[in-house]
Length: 193
Image (cartoon, rainbow, N blue to C red; front, side):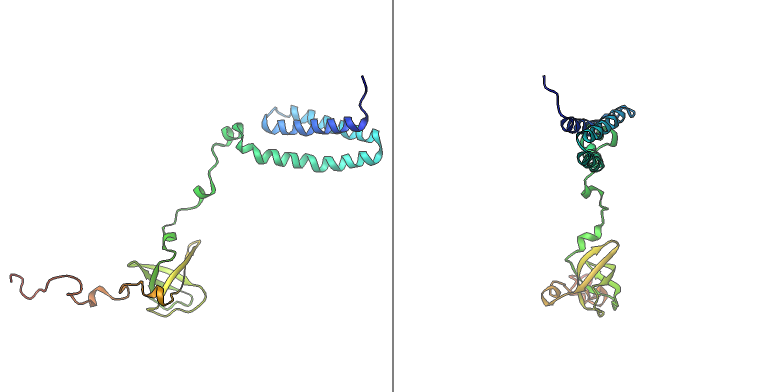
């Protein structure tokens, strides 16, 4: 039976030490596995110094890099393990954590500026008045606007081009100034006739 040289023992002990660090993360043992891990890593460095001083110093540097990297990887994957899920509960997806904002449905819709926007003001979209800000250009009253984005709590609009402005169906026209015939209501002149 041949004996292993000190460098081989140093490598084996370093792997055992990093492995028990990972086990301590996944199987809480009250520090017992951490104690054995520390013993294995220290023994690894000692065995590396028995080989020669350069190898010993390189194992010290390897320990300073490998142990935190191993711990980081173990903690990264721990929430997806059965124990991590039992401890933390089911992790929600990023989409589930975003607040539901009904104003996000306004993106791309066309409306009319109801006040001069320098840069903020009021716009009317689908019959509703909404506070908005422009994308850096002044917008006059009655000018057609398009909702470019909803950022945090702000509705951001930009001036509409000619094609987009045609989408508005008399949105700027007030109902009270519309002739009664256009509203589809019969005349009140002869109610019995």
